Amino acid sequence: MTDPLSSIQLGDEGYLINPEDWNREIASALAAREGIELTEAHWQVIEFMRAWYDEHGVAASPRDVGNFLRRRRLPRSEITRLFPYGYVQQACKIAGMKRPRSWSTG
Image (cartoon, rainbow, N blue to C red; front, top):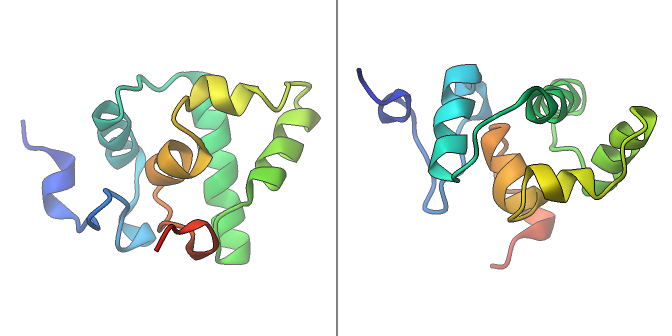
């Protein structure tokens, strides 16, 4: 079985260079690299983030994701439970976002 990540470009930190390359198989492979097995709750957040990206052309902010969780009657802390190393570090990466510039360390 070939690695689904072998056919796409990733940046130095493991984010997709082209978010259009993303699909569920890529997400699962990126999650596995992060030590995360994706559950239905993960997929709900990821699908929200992808829909936001498709509509707005940028990654959803942590506040937007928090509002999404609140509408589903989940605490904002759910994002930390699902993605323990953080919204940018894991959720954005697995959802196929480029590393958000405004949150860049460089």
